Image 1 (cartoon, helix red, strand yellow):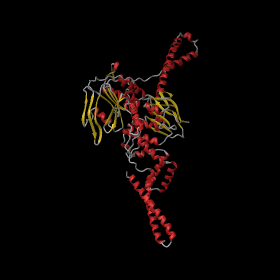
Image 2 (image 1 turned 180 degrees about the vertical axis):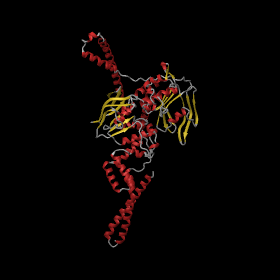
Image 3 (image 1 turned 90 degrees about the horizontal axis):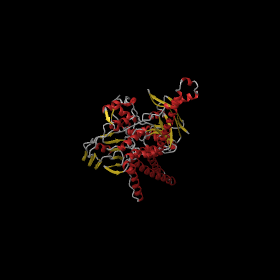
Image 4 (image 1 turned 90 degrees about the vertical axis):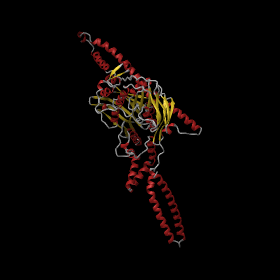
Length: 623
């Protein structure tokens, strides 16, 4: 069954053509990733497919029977609402029934309550609460009453993700879903997106995630669509084969064109006898060879400031915020050429460690000694800082008019930008008009111009396309200075880092020799051994990232019970009083008295049971 069909989609912004005549389709159950360079309109295309933007030409056809949900790269949530309210704003039938039930309770509308209860029973909505709590818990959304306007961009992304997952759509369109998720969340999301009946279209740079979730890759290359059935490695192999075949065909056509050009240039007298079909074929061949591909090129060769023998040394460093222990006597001496990945749950001290390293924070005790030659380059998640209206080339010139660029020697700002895939026609574009990935790439260039010898990259892979990531990986592998990477991208960390600092919480940092996947495998092996020995202990993922067990509160069913149990007890107390009066009036009637006594006993037992249950619910409601 076809769920989505895009036909000849084209889009421009002013004179800038974003994409042209794109056509493809999605079948039910297909899980597809779109791969394309930054600035080629991936996010714009996703908005068009989701019905939030319109193409200049072409059309999108969606299956009327399919429920569609869209996760943008930077979602916005309605202001003035709690996380709980924002999550519940979906068209999921079960959640709608729960909303109706809650509203009926608040308004004390007995008729509406009766209807809502019937609807919840019909849909099995009582069980939905388990799924809601599971999704919120896995995405570490703990304060359900926090207002949406108080949330960070990453928190908003996770709330929006929870909302669309709970809406249980048939077709899910996602733009960079793993941004702002830690590794445990990503691994959980991989499983959440696995059901066969779910149809998925997403843009992602996370290559492990892509392999785990998708069975199809759509590449947009020079305004053409290429489809690959297989994983990321298969895509790379077939893409290389295609480029080689195209290059071979182009060279063959150029050879033919040279021969035909000599023939066509013969004297005008001979031209009258030329074959018209051959002349037409010549024109077609000339047009075809003129349409040769224009591959993007990114070169990262910036020089590094000389590094002395003294790098950075942590000596028994302690750092605490209130009762929270962040570093507990950490010692380490960095050496030249080290490439370190940092892993650990949010709140375990990773950012504090980086701020201590760069001198933005001072330790409570111990020392951080930095060598005189060390020049830090800190790539932050916050992204590039620029003035409104500031153009690309102005931003780079404000940092340096010239810079040493490896074998190329000293280059101007314009030449540097061209090396970073900002051709001259884009260098005068206002920065705010660049795509998210292009802004990230410009941020990276502005950092490297200063020739740092100690690089700190905090989530460098967010929004960068795969070509840029590949070039960045090659540069970092050859980088002779020190490197620290904080990332949720397991592929990137595994390729770059040769050791891992694992922040385990409560001030403890484990130094592991090997990459992040090695570390996870080691922990999994330890967990399996402990299980075999019947001495189970929590593995790293549980120890470092599992949120504290939340106070349970009342389930939806218990909430309904709690709202009505006092009235039930009061009714039983009234019946008890009535029965006691009847006993007094029936003392001369033994048969009637026995019947009343039996009912009175049952009523007293029910009052005791209901009272105990009320006490349990009262305690749970106040938890």
